[in-house]
Image (cartoon, rainbow, N blue to C red; front, side, top):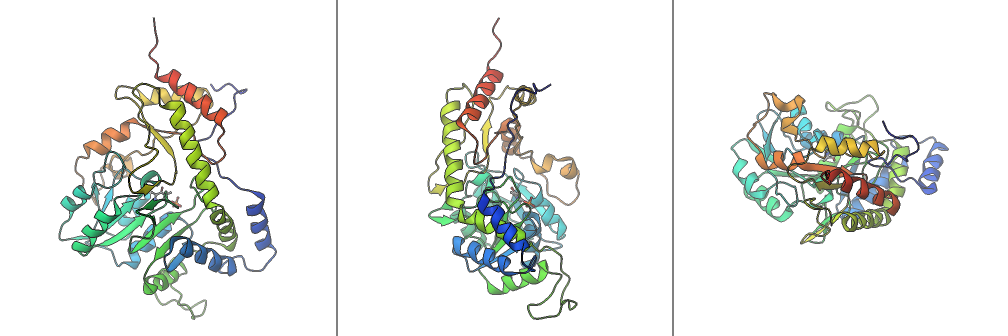
Amino acid sequence: MTDPAVEHIPLSAPDITEAEINAVTAVLRTPHLSLGPELAAFEQALAAYHDVPHAVAVSSGTAGLHLALLTLGIGVGDEVILPSFTFIAVANAVLQVGATPVFVEIDPVILNLSPAAVEQAISPRTRAIFAVHTFGVPAEMDALRSIAHHHNLALIEDACEAIGAEFDGHRAGSFGHLAVFGFYPNKQLTTGEGGAILAHDAAHATRLRSLRNQGRQPNSGWLDHAEIGYNYRLSDLACALGRVQLSRISEILALRRAAAERYHHLLSSIPGLELPPLALPRRTISWFVYVVRLPENVDRDRVQAALAAQGIATGRYFAPIHQQPAWRNHPSTTLGALPLTESIARRTLALPFFNRITSQQQARIAAALRQALTPPSF
Ligand SMILES: *Cc1c(COP(=O)(O)O)cnc(C)c1O
């Protein structure tokens, strides 16, 4: 029942300039549409940006999660610790290699893994910790790294939402044994579809390159397959797009930060509405989404419907994985109650957020939200 005269404001939108269009078009004028020079150049640029020796581009963030687990030898009988308050692909990747996801609680401020909860969840079968930098806020990386080290566990970063974020001056993705990025169009950096894995160890990078390319070795023939692999390659068109986006990343992150600041000023006077912190100790936030928490007693569905009626898209970031129909009754999981995750997730609402969102659009969204949260007076 949206008024057709009202401008629709999407939840997210890619930011593609002439530079991206020209770069992709240039690839189309060459014979190298895959495994060409743009792939090597994009990987090199990603590695350099993160000050990590190796980057391996793949077809999606989800493919990256799968290959990271395979490369670290995680499989049947192993447990992997992860948050439930995240995107479902993280748990699915654990299942895909035959391992068991163990969901643990999050910190209520940074919304990432609580190190104390991680420590409590460690069993003799634990092999890895998935540190997810949810909403572009870096997880508590020093604590997680020391837990991983102490218990001889692999530390994998899911930095899909956090390109350019920093913890203690180091970029998200540079801490773990492996780190995964995703470049879907709603992310800060997009290649349409795509992802990448950062690696410190040359042997890991070689294995990742083999697994993404049907198990082929660096100098083997097209029909020689040394191991079972996958087609998780990223095309040179996508890599050319990603390379231009990466060259613009500081501009992109500054635009998003400015949009977050504008929201903060527009929304801070709404009673009972909790806003995401604009700054956090030891961290540089890479703004992925703008997620507010509604007051306790508010019916979120009603708020979403009220905004939708004014052409404003919103999202429920995140519906906890352990409560998803796909996982609720799944045998391959260690399910405990996660009261904090559940209570936070019930109240979250993601507002429209993208590089080019205007002050006018944000003012309209703020007014609509204020109205939806104001109790009717009689
Ligand atoms: C986006 C995202 C992914 C996966 O990305 P795709 O490229 O869509 O497969 C994985 N983990 C998190 C936390 C994400 O936000």
